[in-house]
Image (cartoon, rainbow, N blue to C red; front, side, top):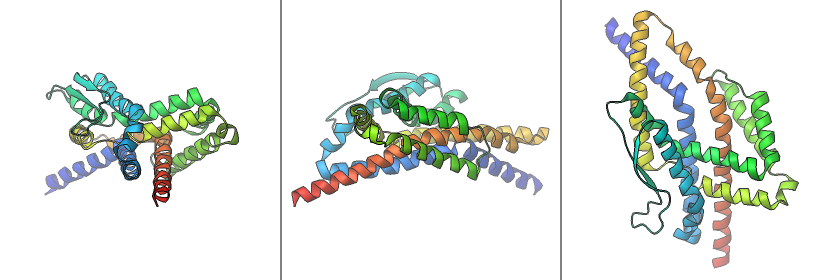
Length: 277
């Protein structure tokens, strides 16, 4: 009986550790997916397929580049890439075909990060866009990160980090100087396009789940060994998961612009509906 209880305890600890390590980025991915589906739904209802295609020119290549870069990092062999394909019968705008060694734990774990690649490339592209087109806003965000964000335990203070990051971006971005600056509107168009295609497809999620199962398996084995050696892995993982403060801070950029994209999509849909009457 004691062995069975220990087994389930290790399972529970492993699951909780996995949530601490990757749970935040998964939640961000699901929220981005919900925002994107709603945004594209309103654009499609307002303008048909062309409403989605307009943003695909920028958003889809960045989405696929995210997959491709992660393939290289995790040792997967890329066999075929389509950064953008229009008018495809399947409706697939782009794809990255990749292969890996199923006997390699490293490459299996890579499936998780390859699936989430568009989130990383989307956030990175938004930051680069801020740096090049609205440098004052980028500087304000960078200063906030340097002064107030630090590795910390995943608790309520990390959520405060998220809201502080959102507040700083809004205050520094939506200013009178920016509103009369053409580069600001160029950045908004680019951000709108990226945010419309940053979320994960069903195939991306399926691939990520394969990698996630391997992450859980490794944590489970690690906890079995730690149990034998009497190590406190739970406290160690919680401390390691302090990087989630940075994940939330940078993820706030993608979440903000995905929400703005949703609002713009709703406005365009309403305007179109009024004009049709």
